[in-house]
Length: 278
Image (cartoon, rainbow, N blue to C red; front, top):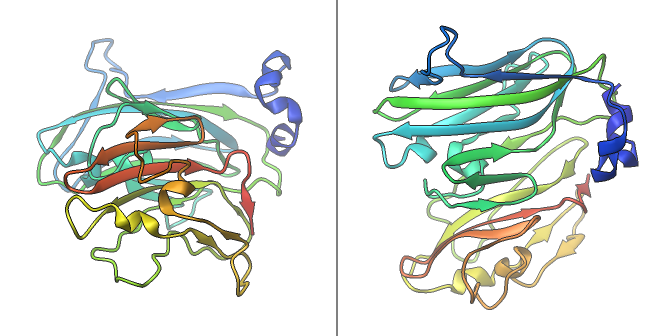
């Protein structure tokens, strides 16, 4: 059972020496003719199903690379992932933002769970399911995606325990935001745990970083006062002094874009460990 795997302390790095009880499989865009055209194309306004899996399992790694004549293609291709036959996707986010950087920008970096690496885009987030999974890429651009390469590795298991949650990732945008009003990163109902975010921000005023003075506030289970109250936006992303030394990438936090001329930043924070339950 997958729940036994997640609940076992040996599931971490020390678990490399422990025998596994799953079957490893991989879906990819390989050329079925035996040639070297190992990619798919997506017409303008079209979509492609990059993975469809039956039964129970857990996605352990996703890798893509993409090519298009649209300079904003990383914002205009939308990833939608569905678990257990659901009609509404549990994952719905622009391509680039999902892998760690906003503004349709490529930023070479690695974190523990996702990154952009020498032209590739990779995720190691575990994504369990008990009754099938479907992964789609939608092209909202007016230009073709000429090359989309992918491979998706997953574990095939006998079952998934009831205690195993599902992976969710949602993209939201407010443009412009309201001065003096808090911006809501996530509003979730039910049971789960918050494991992090990728956040991209731009100031009203070029060259100004004052917008980073906002404090994070995390309210759990309807409480009136936040359980977690921070000291500044760059502090939440583990930087300081308006990210004084520029971009960096660490396992659980990083700054993937730092444009001081146009006052744009993109950063990630992973609550791994330290997930926030609700």
